[in-house]
Each structure stands twice: as C-alpha cells, then as structure tokens.
Image (spheres, rainbow, N blue to C red):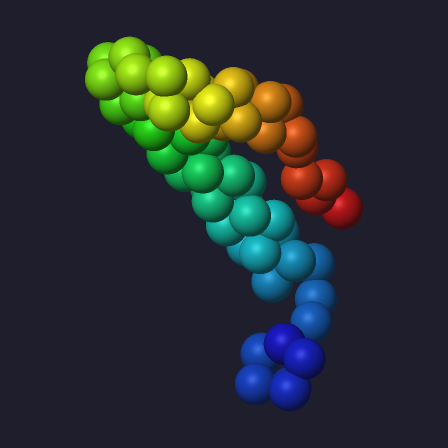
Amino acid sequence: MQNGARPLNNHTIEILHAEILHLNRFVGDLYELLLAHFISKNTDQNYLIICFLSITRHLKYVVL
C-alpha cells in the first residue's frame, strides 16, 4: 500500500484490520501456551517468567 502496489481504499483497510485482529488473537494464544508451559515446570526461575508473562499479557495493542 505504501509503495503503491495495492490501492489504499476502504476494502484494503478492512482486510488489513482483519489481519491485525487475527495476529492479535494468535499472539494471545502464544502467551497462554507459554504461560501453561512454564506453570507446568514450576521452578523458581520459571516463577519470574510466569510473572512477566502475566503482566505483559495485560498490555494491549491499539488497533486504529
């Protein structure tokens, strides 16, 4: 879109928006998998990773 290869119109913006939402859900799923993995290991070192993942999970990207 930036280089003119695709036109910038409402249709392409809707497609781009849908892709961003899909990627956001995908990243959320990865967080949950990582959290489940580290919880299952239950070590002191993993406790810090679990805390980090729990905190960063609440950070959201704003989709305009």
